[in-house]
Image (tube, rainbow, N blue to C red):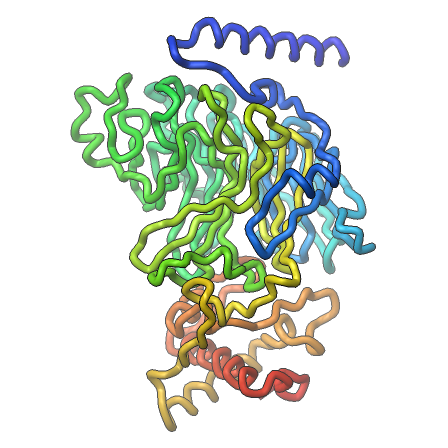
Length: 533
């Protein structure tokens, strides 16, 4: 084994040197190249280094949550609140225990699944864990009664096989969509080329049992991260631009994914710019390609993306100061893995993207310090949000998981920070309903709230054993009546879909807003007695 490791390292060095000799003039190889080639990692920074070198958005603090997590890639919380991280080069999924003793660190770890084929993306649905392997999708039953209790039941079964594997981009990302279907991204086999298999450089969709394979979107060179914007069915995916065109060309991309959409690669990049290798003579393909909705810097390698869904993850400092700023939930965090194909390193941070009401997207730094000059001590891979609103970042170079929480100074109610840093009251979300019409709507919603036992997950004192309570708070700062009703139809797991007619979903949303308005006038109103109609 030792000789094998030495051989891999020597091979990596030889490849790096060859790249330096063979690349065109003006191009260089910089940064932790061996990390990309072999998965080589370094030791996680000491707590004092994290404290003094890392910078996070005002109102937040960052700590080292777990170290020694080799090849830490994608993150996901189980429905019961267990944090899982994939380690594809080790062939396993790892479960990290929470911080039970209050020291800011994970209390331990346990292998959840082992002996898999390069497991990368994974997700949970209906009592099963779905895992994207190098050339397959596997499914295994899971059981849990609360945080840190997750365990598998039986052996994984491959429900999809024959996915094109290996070569340049071998990781596979998997998510279960709001529609209950499996979404899978498969990167290109090369830097830039014409693929023989149309499933390469594409997003594929399957039924939950693995049947019905469909190429959902194409022309995506390497989309490692994707997520759905809360309260909508809008799907956004990061994409890594091609190499070897210089320091600043092409940009990496954020794309809004549409069914049947084509996103340009290998014929075009950026705002439908002609690719010098394959774009000539392809005007129709280029004209028909969908440009990105946001451009990252060239070679920054955006990977994981997650929209913030928990009210307490929000901070006034994360909201745009522009007057047209949108719903505070319209914030996504993106991990920039960092460049190798630039004379000056770029990326190596987590950025916040904020959706404005006019459709524009504003990018700002959220977590920095992984790279200072040519000194790189980490490469962010993925970002996820915990049940308590804490934010977790994986780092496959430092073999670490970081945890970001709000500081006491940032505990500003979300309802007071809409539209920037100037507090203002939230408008009545039920203003269009008055008198008897309003009373009838709210009463119907109260009946539905009770019939569906919503208090069992959302009201302190009435929660079922083992359930992590998700308080229904600050709804007026995040939704309109219609957008909340829409969210109930396509919620973020583990919340179940509210399978009701639109009129009933509007009524349930109205009841939730009415409860919140009551608490604004009487903060003590949310008691056990007030939880039921």
